[in-house]
Image 1: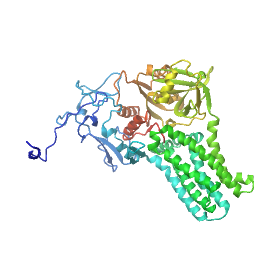
Image 2: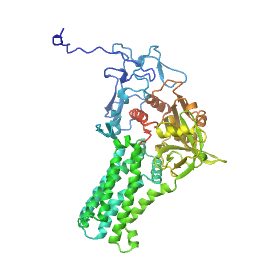
Image 3: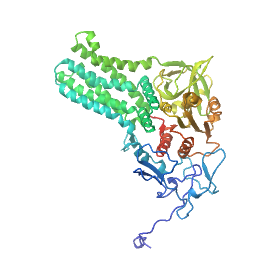
Length: 578
């Protein structure tokens, strides 16, 4: 029969249902196992008026955002079969922390390597973006990079508000004074409006300043702040990169305004003063463009090099310009050193230079190296704070951020700390391969920052009971917390998920953690690959945790944290370029 003579199906006709399959690893139904979108087993975001509490499960934690709750509808195993997943009897298998249906028939997954194991609706980032207040920008593919989705979260944008208000006030002041022919007014403009934001932007990234920020965050627990307030204060500290970027853009705008004013003051002539004034905003434009997430994500090593060396070049141009302006407008050296642009410039020089002057430098022969199949522990003979990161390099050009862990004081060896390095990229794989050959790294010079900035685990001090999920080499920065939990007055329950801990990681780490009662080593080579999303929520509720911390790779940390936050539990995950 020809196509044009075929009868059209009735309006009520629907294609036959495809049997839904059950994951053999996560034991949850996932949207990837469907040929059509599930209709009734999704997670719905509901706006509550505060009176409809009869549908809420008593074990659900209170959502972080007021008047928002999450409800779930249990899925059916088959559309025509009234038997549902919730009706199956669940049994707890020995040595496992998840539930297994008694049914002996388990279909094979289309994608059995999913470690998160959640359905498409649960794992999707859209709902979590709404809860966390994200602004979404979709950048299409072009000649230089793939298509990219930019998510700028609420706490990142909050930092923009005080900067914007301050700029509006300063612009109003500048608008009334910029036509003043007095040279002192010009110096005030370059000092407060052009050089000031550059100094503040460098200050925000200073290691000592960041320790002060987290010290203030810790005080919120003792000040009696609510759980809601502590969560958002900690998130603001983690997203302080929003303040750094907004100050950088502020510096760019004010330097463009100043360069135009300098060109007019010089009688529209291009000389050393007006030329250096125009070079500064040109360099700042390149620096700001290279820091865009779509470029920084795909070309991170290039971004680090451009950001560092162009900043140094911009600092040299700033020094040159300030000196030229002082020579032209100030009579004595003493007056030149006392004006605002000179003072700000000297502060910027100190903030830029001192971390590189006090850098640790050590040969490989003086480092204790303990290698395993998939990772290597580099033990350095100096002290390191708890909950910190460091920048490590072997060529003084390419620096990599690593978590650093202090070791107990040894009377013979003194203070020590170690970096656990897993083979993830070209640099780490090459270093781990060379570490397995005795003596091959003896002549290699290691460079490490002496002042280690804090990482997001400093937020642990803000809570009394915490559940921590870590995967792979992310266990390293958490070892001091679980060893000293009584001293720190923090109740911690930790799950370390990895492949073959004993062979892939240094033995001393396993020996430290294995005897601890509050630590579970989950070996994915001996046990089924877990559903990290649901396991994290179950463990957090079982432990009655106030907050959840996740130390993992970016993709895993993002998925699990999105799932946990939708269940009303404060969650903090590893920060990457924020």
